[in-house]
Image (cartoon, one colour):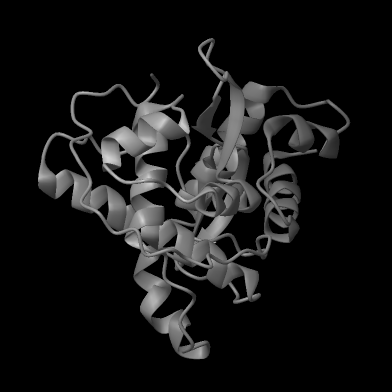
Length: 229
């Protein structure tokens, strides 16, 4: 099989895939005849082929996918003018704390936010697949330790936590909350089978929406924290 045919196979599989495709699954397309390095070169070629178009090929946490470019969102939204549910500031701030301070307990989050966190809020984030309990702290009560998931990175269009903006100022905190809200809202919009909202895969995502709570206390500093801590 020549390069052109191999790229055509990859392109078709990626466009038709319901979820990001890892290199392992792409290799199955060619019965293992292509190495991972060869596949990466073909994917880079495809990225160049699609440059300047409304759709781009990106590498996210769980693999590769085609998604619409952010600049296209205002036009695609006109096909479905109804707005997806907005997430409360309490939800966004809690998710930001988990993203930057992970692994953290519910008590850690409450200390940072300065208010009690409703257990339903954490359950909603777990149900959406954005956070999970990865262990327990060896202290009284053995509270669960929360961390973000690869699905969280996928929905924000990120490959790793290192790509989160540095939280070194209030403006950066606001930027992070905006990025999280954009990713979460776009992911919910994708559940409605909208064909490729900005930053969203061409194939639809799984369903979820935030019922929301109104614990909108100000977020305290998240500065000087390693995203991978």
